Length: 333
Image 1 (cartoon, rainbow, N blue to C red):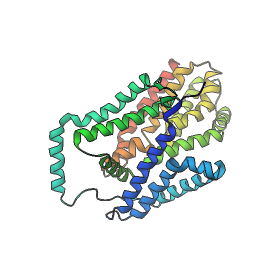
Image 2: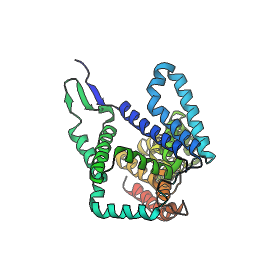
Image 3: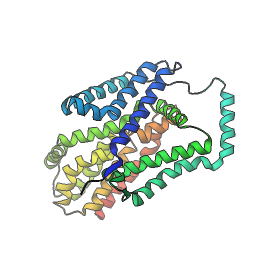
Image 4: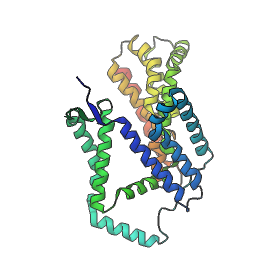
């Protein structure tokens, strides 16, 4: 029996992302109001290479050389961001009063319809995840079963963009232009979650969890449940603050403390243990600029003078939740 071919595969999604990034790079290059337009365009062009040409590079250059070239690209991206070589254009006409008047008139005309495209994204994603996973026509399946959620999210975003164009009278080109405006506002922090996820993979490959387990064994009495729980929760929060992502911290702390000490030795219930461990990691997310998508991006979009203001307001809540988490883990798990 032939294996059904996938219409919306992960590769197709990567190509779409690559096309959008290349479009943003081209628009940045043509924007003379951006004093750093050359380096800004170079940054997004380099970032889009892996998405758009990754398969071709693997096909013609081989796996080893492709990985080396992508590693060089990552270092170039870090240099461009580190030397503050990304800029932003004006993104509006000189007649600001007219622009504001047009926006207000459009908002009054559309009303709450403006929120419908955004609401459609999660609704369509859930519906497709439930009903679309078995959609097969002949030798073709609609969605990639190995990456079902991402495929559903992609379809939902495309439908929502088209719906937004219909109710606003805009075009997909306008959507890409607005994407570029947001990209300019966020800057290099936009790709930080992806880079931090890669860092988590590096830590797992380097067996950092084994090193953590060795240090804990040397410094803490393995029979003390409270001490192990405190180290586990604080470790999840601290590693998340370093890597900016609780998912990157999870395999390190799970392999170092949760599995060998709390689950195997003290017979903790695995499900609530790792769930509360993730929540402890999220406490670290609230307290770190490395979690750019949560803390730095909102500050940039709101144009706050203090880019760490969001973090400062979240720290008391994060500490309180972390303390409660330790108590719940000790008495319940």
